[in-house]
Length: 114
Image (cartoon, rainbow, N blue to C red; front, side, top):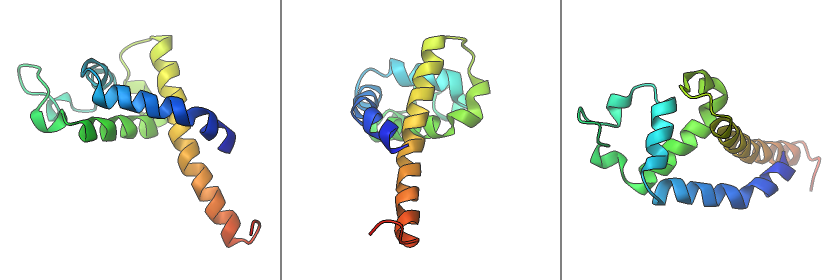
């Protein structure tokens, strides 16, 4: 898990920056694929509500989608291989980030590493 974390870290930061700071079209597509309730993020005209347009809100939402993707992948309305690969790559990256941290803490608690 640690090795995937190292490989994924730089592309993961770049992807998160593009999604949260770039054009809203990326998060709009991901929302349409994975959101449980689109009316929470979009008004009746289809525009994103102002408080959900902020970069920190977008990056938080994307991170939540990535962490939850193994459990919500059936919500996706597209059969795009690129989208599935993109989400699995990022999901594994976020899970390896948390998993590596947990394993390091466990190893230190069990005194397996100094």
